[in-house]
Length: 73
Image (cartoon, rainbow, N blue to C red):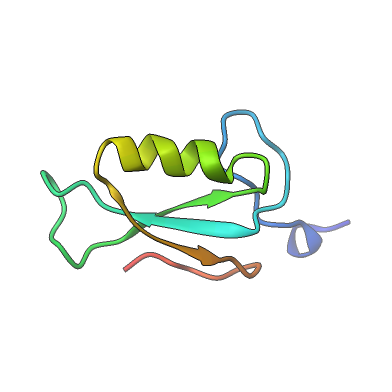
């Protein structure tokens, strides 16, 4: 299996599972309002990553992720 065949991986610490969602976020103290960073999440880590970003007021949106998609703006 080559690098092109490998899935985009979850951003959860140590996770090697395929990402199914992208959590779009920004830190309003350092990013402009339209700026979006992205963390990828597998089904097992979606809620914990959403909770982490949400508790800090960083989460802006959660969208389905397709392999190779760039969700940053």
